[in-house]
Length: 204
Image 1 (cartoon, rainbow, N blue to C red):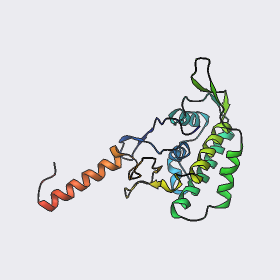
Image 2: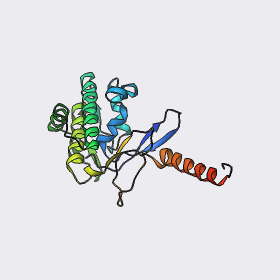
Image 3: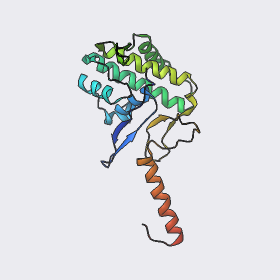
Image 4: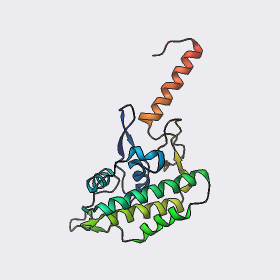
């Protein structure tokens, strides 16, 4: 159910600028919460409330009622780090690391969030659900993404100092930036200044 209508994520750059970022897939949204190695400094999943808050911001609609344990938060970090490494080697065109792939596949094999419909025809999640159910949905989304038609459209932002990962689901397949209002806009400003400099014109 990770393909529900996207709400997008509100992220904050190192300069404090807030912008909307839609990575295009539930599993890639989890990568914005931190990661292995140098990405550890961006860690935000410290406790059950943090994972629940991420689910609230994610593309899951509506937000499922969750009962999350500390152990499941640790599982979320493990799954995220494994998925991060899998995506990185995917972008390089290299074979997937066996241990990380097993982590993703094992999470995907567990019971996922269960959808339901109300008497009035509205969509909801059967609940309450566990953190394990949430992570299973994330892992299944990753499996579908990596083995599906959009696998070749997983990319990193074209900006030199941005490493956000997204899947380009646009029809033309020409997306270059994490967000047009952030890196896309910075590129436009930089290009304009370069053109003005070549012409000897002042920046506007």
